[in-house]
Image 1 (spheres, rainbow, N blue to C red):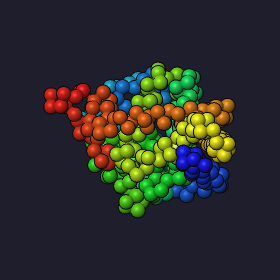
Image 2 (cartoon, helix red, strand yellow):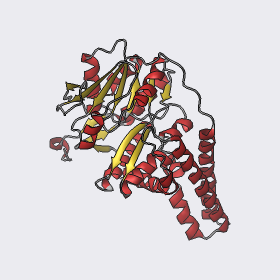
Image 3 (cartoon, rainbow, N blue to C red):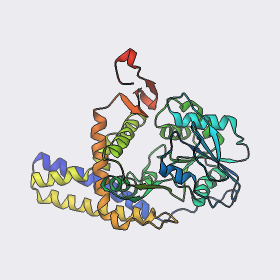
Length: 375
């Protein structure tokens, strides 16, 4: 057996084992949520700069939460809002404008006696999501997060995005059961304890503030909880493949900065299927072909299990028609983003500005007059 076949075979076995462990953990009965204060008062912050029509629809949704709820849109522009939704004008100068919006809101709004949630405008908030984020914090968790669950994809690019976030190891449900050390956290939907709000003050110049917040809370020995309800993200059609590619390339850069030890696992464990299929075809080894077939089978079972776990109410979108195929499209998208991130180390372009990216996700603006770089 040649060395390339041996190496490829070892890679396939390692990737299959990784997926099998994730599948086994996801098949376990889910622990019952720790009971906390029933329907605690909630302050729901929705930071946004320039809302899209879809985001305006999300902000106008009625939220069927049984407890007291105040929803505040924190934005430099006053969008048309649903009755009872408050607008707080905010135009921060911080590199991370989202964190700037949140810090300003936390400074001027009354938070005492209320659970503070921060949810992006592209999330369609439901009463179940509010309950799922608020209950763990009321029960003592330092931070709660929800798994982003894209629904309603209408083209290839949006299906690849949904496939990546719902049916692959990059699903936050899979990341949650496989996390070593600090928990995987998605900043789209967060429940913030007073300790988390205090830690957020040091992250206004960070990209990937959610990862850094999780790391800092973990270093203090504090818990991060996953919401029982998903953060539903209506998709529709995506303008081009460049949109998801740029987004996930930036995610790879954030991972490289925050968790450099995990960065190489992306091609090795998270996106190995296509490279191994190509290697099996090129090398022509029947044993390798069998190993890759087993990997594909386990990955497909994992996708089906994740689809069963990520059916959001009230949409009823099981995702099962897409789960059999779109997990591979999601892997290919992430693999392409990883490759792009290799050529973009050191700087990140975010919201039209270019920053030097320092360890831990800290951003320093690259000024054109000093560097000749883009502004």
